[in-house]
Length: 338
Image 1 (tube, rainbow, N blue to C red):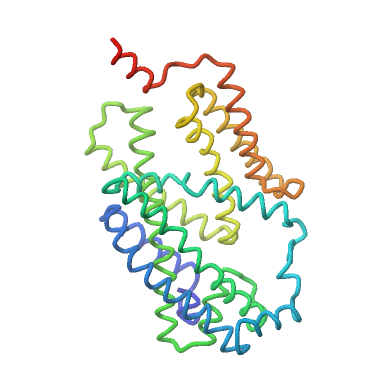
Image 2 (cartoon, rainbow, N blue to C red; image 1 turned 30 degrees about the vertical axis):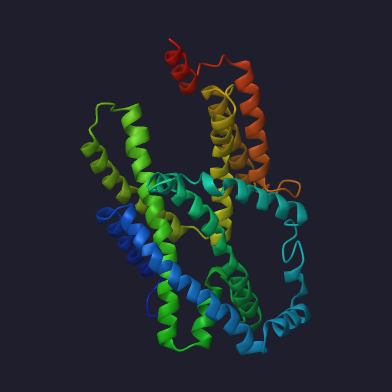
């Protein structure tokens, strides 16, 4: 909003408006409404990515090949690892790709979305279609490379796309791109808040403190938690300077720690709850220590990937050393046999 409004709206005001809209949207709607809004978002995002991803290099350099030639001459470090950094080399890149690939389906809100599927074929179809979104990523990279050379003094990489669009296109087109960007941020934020609020009310508070809560009471608590979670996120949005990329990598470093529990829970009968819980705690502790002590990457490897390896090891060791209770599948088989 700050960039799209040509400086007429301050950053703090824009953040307050955005969070109020997201909170209101989540408060009065559900996951189905988020899904329908996502359809509009997808069309706008694809249009914006293809139009500006191809258009901007041609506008400033006469083509994509010419843009890369100019980039090689002006800033060659941006095209090789570790790039403009000193620590994010090949090992970091490979470990980060593995971490994000393994953790892609570990986000809790994706579990919530999966449970709403009509049937198995819907899940299979989405698994095929979802990776196609990554086709737009190289186009956004082209926008970033163009901005590096055409927007001098750009201090915030998160604003590169909107800044160069504002510089290159008329104001009405900036409105379309701004709308696409707003929805692209708003839809994931809505489903994340919805999933977090529901998980807290149903799977944490009711299970731990109020087992006799009715579904109606759980729904009321979830609505309250929507406001609480939004306010917490609002605080960090205003007072944190973390870039979007770093925030996403930190999120993957934490959420991928669910992988051993999910994977072993599905395919290894000797896994125990103690093993999964201990491994999860160990993984998160390693991530927190390495990130807070500024040791990420650790010897050139993504801290989240190192934590995941520790998580797997601890889960296996503790599971093998603790007595395993029969799981629900085994109990059902035993009951059927009787």
